[in-house]
Image: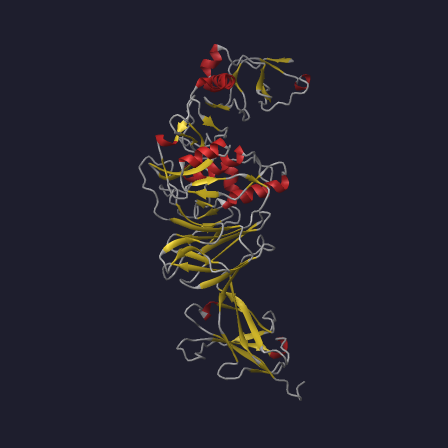
Length: 567
């Protein structure tokens, strides 16, 4: 071993995470050390060091049920223990590790790493990401940004930080890029695909400031593609608050993300254990410093939310199929499957239903500002998340129920492997939309369509069509209560035998009422020879785009004539 004279009170770099640096008496930061000897690691045959510092002051290795710590510095001398509390924490954590449960109550506690979204005095030092912009909080007003100066992770990142702790506990340590998973890097990852919907921002993992809990699973699947040794986490399970269930989860090694209320409104914490004598729940709180030598308990500052407030993830290798619809709480959503089963808000009964298998309809309130020194009432507004986990292939009916002008609805679709795609559209109140789920394309495209009506060769009872270049085919697109012809993208129109034929010529500038319902309709013209119609065909189809992200199609009868002198 080489001797290195570093001088008095030299600080090491930040130590890596271990059972000692994140122990019972708190997290350990940079250590103070005196002169030390550098170890030749290869001289310790068979030992692979779990943690250390760039100055090689201390090395750790778990061996069976024991723990080896090797140091070449006077880390535990009195003057260093008195000089730096990190040295004291390291010593106490090491002592506690050796003593096991002899130091405190016989609590059942999982070894979940502790991360913080921010800590007072919020000077961007510990943690370094606390001042980073949360979601697109610099471009939109979020409920958790009470100062209106741009939402930060310190203010809004409780769910984000709790999700980070769950991933790190399950040894999902890196993103696919190789970057270490922290609240900052997950925040950056979740901001991918950011787009302004006209009312709010949505992205890979955020919708109007709320985390999309499904995205946690997709992220782990993405990372597993590169780092196959990292596990994938199954789709989240949402349940009502239950002390008994939480204890069962902890006993089985599964921590619980729990929604709570406190002085600053809605908040998320991670439950990692419980005291069997008192039933008090032990938490990692994203906004409070870890207590030195003590546990933090949920009931000290918070009350658990009752409905759908518990979230758990388990390791999986299976199925990430999901279909998800998200709307601001000013409107409700209802989805009906091929069998007539419904999930969402049923206007006929005035109640929430969850008839479709593996479906949930959940109100997610906006998070409170964790940096606020003033009391904040829990948000009464938020987002509705309608989630179909493991959906069957086929067509689903989507209806948005709210005011006359509902806000945009965001849609997320994931295939079996966890490939994710997202889109949004602005619905009409009460209109039925058709959405298609196909697991072969679920991670690539989202199909949204609306019913339309057409009249081929309007003003004539028999729809006679001559499929010749000298004869254009007029097609009227009819205005209905749920279809506004002014929203038709004329350049997208195709018409013919299948509806995919590129036969469009033009549309009339003037709208006309072709069916005498006092509503103006749109008449467009298509080339007879490009429609692909044959003498045996009895119907033709029109397809096109309607408003942003929505398609439509309609069919009407035809009678094909081929005059002998033209063919």
